[in-house]
Image 1 (tube, rainbow, N blue to C red):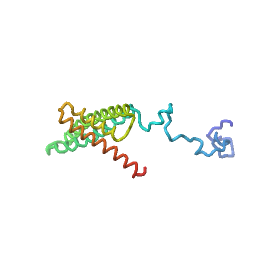
Image 2: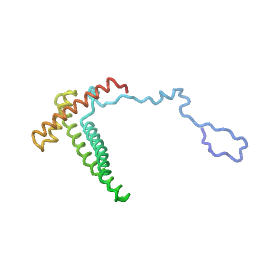
Image 3: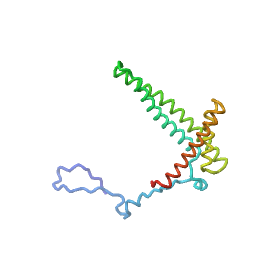
Length: 188
């Protein structure tokens, strides 16, 4: 097919309507099946397809990132609330905004870092437990939560580490149980 300018020729008296070139017109395939992409994940080795979970690196990145983002949002909202409470009636608008931003930024960073470290510890311990036991179930998540709480609060003493470990284990078990309930009863 010859190239035709899209600009009308001033010397041509008949203005024919031009048709766009379709390279797939002779294939006679429906457009939906032309680009049929797989929806399941592809694996390099067949052994990888047997495990229905993320790798330890993906797990580490996911939990650390989610912890940091959730902590930053929660800390920023807590800091904004404290910033609003600390505003004095004699403050100018510029000073009010400055107090609000400083307070929310400081709290957001601190909370984000704390929850990011907790996510990092949890992902590392859970990946270690799954690698040793070769099982990914409620008990490995419970053990990872228990270990995370204990390690995170270990510097404050044995009693604090035991309480934090129990709370971490309960929180991890509740999260896994909630995920299973959501999978079963909420159609997505």
